[in-house]
Image (cartoon, rainbow, N blue to C red; front, side):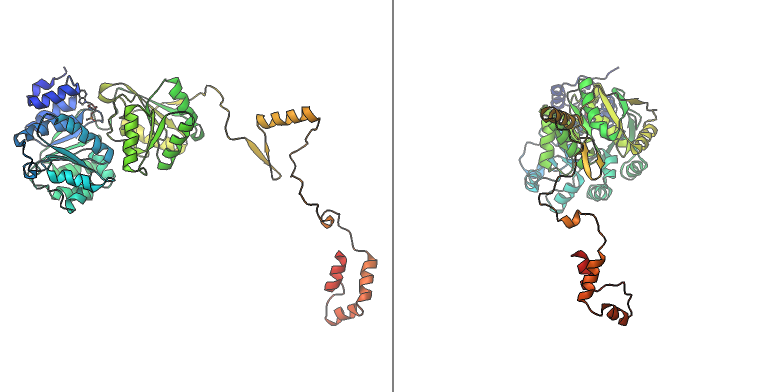
Length: 482
Ligand code: AMP
């Protein structure tokens, strides 16, 4: 039985924002987490991406902070009371957008700080005072060190995508940030997957947390139709294009494992006529946000991305996710395919399994999801002419064997009657020295005698030097060549 938001007794200004978002009923994580947080409990939430967890922590935090609402412009009246930490800039930006939307009809202020952007505008906003601060750990530490922000009055901390923060190596930064916070506070930790490290982190920073699991950890969304195709690495691009056409897919994420592979594939899809763009860590923050924005607006159809984009990005109605490469980390598979089938919508996840390495990584996914994967073959609809010419090596000449070349030869035969036997080495432009072309000839006896005559006592000279008479003087050798 779906639960309505009206059962929560949320303040009217929050209910108004919820209604504006168009939500009719609560998602399972919201139904379970919101009452716990309103009552002041710590939460350890295992929730899939796309389950509505942002609202699950934001709405009750805003509800509890409403008592501090102030119309005053004084920064002192707007200290940071809630801190939301996330692993990536994109995710921070997205969550900050949602916080703003839910707090729209309140006097509570929010801001976001993340790296790769100028610190100055962030500093200006922090100095004006904000109640909800959304941040990535590195940039937050920069602001703390620059004394742009104080965390002394923080009452609520959210560690979102906590497993990812640990993967990225944020644990030391996290611990430093947590050391600046008051001991007495509410802590909410969300993670799609619960590793032993996450359990250790929660044991040291959460107090008697209520564990909420809306789906078993490591389970993929049931609304996503998953298929795995066996495709040779060289055929992946072709397979991608064929499946896009066959399944009539307009917009899709295409995940690759390397930044270079990401940039190359995006370029190659673009030159094949697709509206594609790349999103990877070597792009500037501005370029990354622009790429994402173009995808959200529908100006771009294929967002080719590395795992930087895999976590938590919420873009509505992405019908499909391609794993062009199988992710190195099986947990990333769950995050990647979580980009589709969000908030109950159905989605397709297609993965290409290439060489042995992909097979091994696929085995990791089977273990993690506890599902047996059936590999499908891919049949190519039509033989596409390979742009690269096929050739073979032959005594140093590359002999092109493609249709086009054969066509040219046939045409030449018709017009001139000339039948080329082979593609021989081109004739040198200068005539060669005949010495190099004529066959070797033994020197004549006369020429040697002639030379000896010019060199009296040459045999005697050789004998005196203890050398064989067959060893000729330099001049004799020269005569042989004359
Ligand atoms: P999240 O898991 O927080 O990233 O949310 C995923 C998507 O679900 C976002 O686009 C939300 O706007 C949407 N959403 C959150 N709560 C609800 C709800 N109760 N009903 C419908 N959509 C929701």
